[in-house]
Image 1 (cartoon, protein in one colour):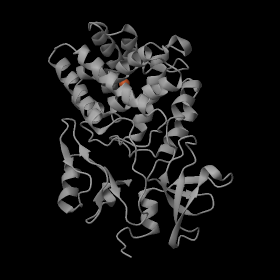
Image 2 (spheres, rainbow, N blue to C red):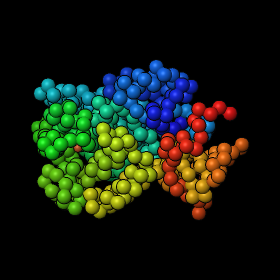
Image 3 (cartoon, helix red, strand yellow):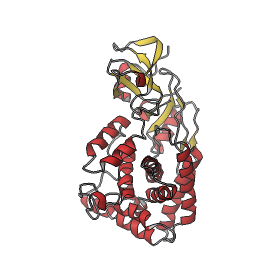
Length: 368
Ligand SMILES: [Fe+2]
């Protein structure tokens, strides 16, 4: 199973992962054979990336998710409901949110040895709700690495899930075009940390520290963030964690002005931002939880060979097991073989192949 752009989808491919909207409806179920009608429908819904089962690179391990599909759906729906309530000037249902984050926490703790290897896919309209759940998951994973107890993890998780809640008070048209705004619109958008803080601190039974996550998640380690220009340890540690998780998830998503990053590109960029935007200790803790080359990635090794990641080594996030399918001369192998990069010292991935690179390499419609 691997992720491709819909531009390269065609009839006869099988969907690898169900596509779900923010209402929890399954738009297209895993296993379904794609045809022109389905592809057009997905494009109409604003979905541009899908997971497929691949016939050329062959079977891989199941891609493990840190939280179950059921929990993801319930939580996405809950975030959307909370946004809707706030738009109607209703209150946050704190008890329900606490219950749902507790549920996520239990599942994440059960999977604490699993590397994050999946990107949630949503339409641009629903992005903010899916984003909230992904940021919450990655923040909790980082909190676990930093040795937090359950009380702190819960406080962190609730704040992370609601970090962008202030956006419920901003024109949805502006939210949808984020990344493509003029100065005036950006000034409006930049009010969301303060708006979120006000909503949360006025909600009963919500920790003030969770509220500070909403307030401080756009502050920068070097003091050049907003709204208050706080720096270093003056930014609460929870907000320092959510700041990194927020950027990581944003890079992994398609935005109105650019396609999604590959995991290794996103990690490299975040490493470069370390000590400027983010606290290095937190960057390190977060990255240790992410599979640099997730199952299903097509990678080229420094030997020139090309293959698919079939299995992760959870103790070595940069060194998965790869099935070599093309040799260094880009000839398709009769008998693909697997190599375990954790057992090799000098063989490393040099790049993740994009769909465009792959298409140059082989006609994807080719049938053996
Ligand atoms: Fe934000």
